[in-house]
Length: 193
Image (cartoon, rainbow, N blue to C red; front, side, top):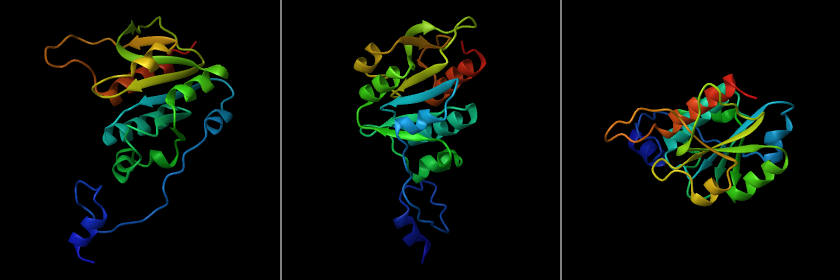
C-alpha cells in the first residue's frame, strides 16, 4: 500500500509518520467495582469532567499510572476518548491503567462516596493546598475541562474544593490541566492522612 493510502486509514496520526498500521481491539474499560477491588488501604481515583484534549488525556493516563492511581473515570459524552493519539501520548500506560467510561459522572462519584471515597475538586477558587494539607486515604481528585473547569453540579457536590499555589501572571490564568493534576497527585502521594 502506498503511504497516502495508509494516511487515509490512520487519520488520527497527526504526524503522518505511519509506515505501518496495526489494528487492535478497542481498549476495554473497567467497572467501578474492578477499579476499587484491589485497594486494601490507600486508594486514589481521578475523575475527568469533560476534558477534551486528547494529548492532555494521554499525559494524565501516563502520570496516573506512574504515581499509582487505581484508575480514572472518563465521562462517555463531551470528553476526549481513548484514541491512537491518546495511546501514543500515554506511552503505553493505557495498556495497564484501569479506566471507567461513565454514563453519568455524578452517579459514579456518588457510588464511590458510598464506599468511603472523598471527592476533591481541583478549581482555581478552591482552598489552597499547602504542606499541612492532607488528603483522605480513599480520595478522588476531579479535574475539569481545560477552559471551563469543573461543571457547577459536580463542583457543588464535591466534599472539598482545592487549588494549587501559583503566581499571578497577566495573560496566563492557570496551569495546564495535566500539569495541575500531576502536582495534586504528587501532593497526595507524599501527604496522605
